[in-house]
Length: 326
Image (cartoon, rainbow, N blue to C red; front, side):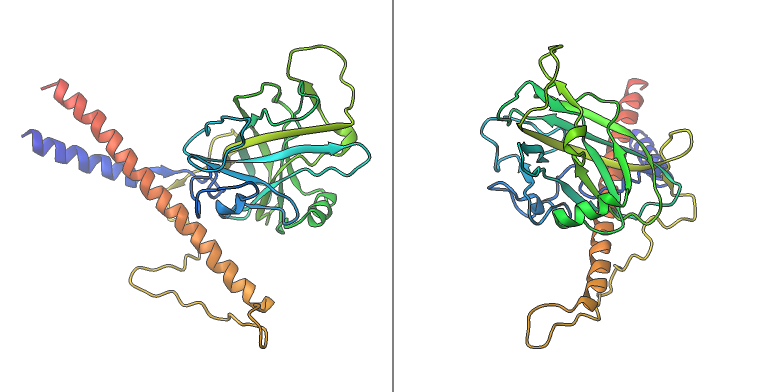
């Protein structure tokens, strides 16, 4: 009798999960858990695809058992991976050498759609002078084109792209994870997100980290390093509630999905330059489509894992209640 009841409960839970709702985080690998290999040195953010650093600048990838910064002993906010970047690397009479992290979203942003963004920042011990200062100017920029170097970043930023600025949270406590969150509205078509400090020199929002009320003077040299983890961008309604995909609705959460069970995936229109190993530009559209589908496949696998965890958790809770009533 008990076995039969267990089977019935398992079936009910499974049906509830299948008819449930699923989160639509648009950021792939937002917790930096997926990686090609463990990082062994700085400037290896590309080991956590599809995350990228600017081609002429570094940004770091960290994972348990891999490369660490000697001064810091940082545990990820969640999981085993996280990233890090120099949010401010300013020297007197020289251009800033700030670092940024960038990623292609799972889907483009929709025009006039409201989104919730959140991520966790850890203010590092890795700083030279002015150790009692930090900045609040950590922003996320959303663009139609990828940001592959510093020159392209400046050009895109000059066009006043879709931007989320941290206006509410003080990043003034070292050595702990601080949640940054807020809302913004998409303009439509934005495919890429870049996170970092985009502010001009004179506009930095400096804050003290030692509770001192002493007047802040603009330093001639300052170097501030932040870790980042658990990044999310989620569509929300006018009431701030997450918009989820419902299994009962006739909606395909993964449109234009190329992979099919039992069928080979054929990639056409890949051409190389004559007598060269370099690809022609006409090949990039096909490769972009393949890349997009790999990201969507990662999303699908993640949802399957979440469903499995939910089934296990709900079953264990119901099993305990059932045994208590026997």
